[in-house]
Image (cartoon, rainbow, N blue to C red; front, side, top):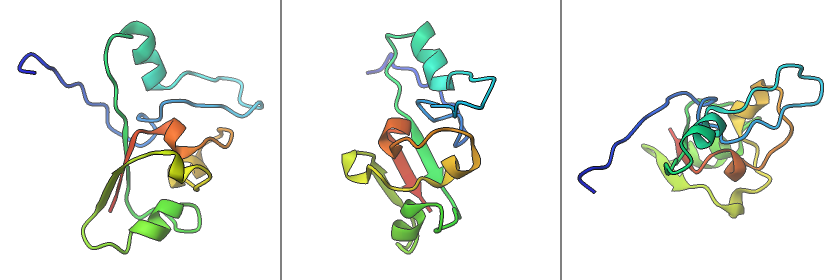
Length: 108
């Protein structure tokens, strides 16, 4: 589509589609994805997380795919339900399936 435009937001936490905050978090803002969907619902948004040097103890994706030379890139789908997603180990959100958080993943 020659008239297509791309708007890119970078950062692992900025690309999360939902933030299911733990109950003890007083300020519970929506994700940037949530804000964008509310103000421009007609736009298609595809989120991609990059996992670089995540701790394999906290990230199943790093444990399984980091040994591949170069990088591993894939669409996130339900086969990854229940997998530990490294970036969420550092923020106060409830456990959420990875594919509810992002649409694609790049593992370095």
